[in-house]
Image (cartoon, rainbow, N blue to C red):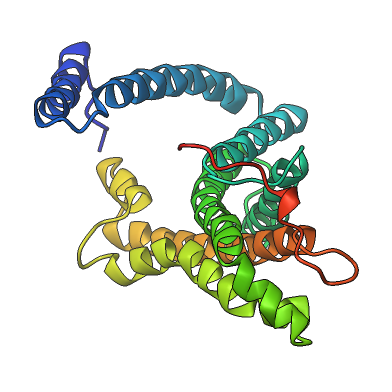
Length: 268
């Protein structure tokens, strides 16, 4: 079975729906019509560009090119996490923490999947490595961004309570434990909800794509189960690592809260 090709007219009709949504936002007064249109244009340009890049990458199958593509994806994901935070660590520390936590979780999970589960040869085959890493990074990015933003905001807003606990003799882990656990749950809730609703409320993207491409529904289901497990693991480990590393930057060696390490609140 061949995939039905989409033409300019088909995409234009879909774009019209987006314009209609932006018009509704204008009439209602939501104030996000410009953001809707800009995001749609940006997405279109990015996907067209990445399509051309992937076409060349799939044709070459070169490890250096796959590595460079993966590195670019990681660096952009780190920037997106940092940009979404209302309060962030001063300097490049926040960017390095978010990027490092995503690298540790997403890249290690992707490597294990490619070498032990999918067992593709060579393991860096771009048709498998890039889409898998992209799904892992995308979901981990969302989890880390949500958890990190809530951590820095809650620590700042509840600094009085945290400092009182420290004065009572608690360690920084104990004083901030409730906040950190809530932040970790916040970062993991989206993927947990996705797993709970998969197959009943929604058909996940990879499974739908494989079915549209002509794969057996059972094979598509198996791949989707694998992907969901990997995404959950990658997101969870990334969130835990990011929250731990950011927390360490918010307390000094004498276990004092250092809110000065946070920037002023910025609008998202």
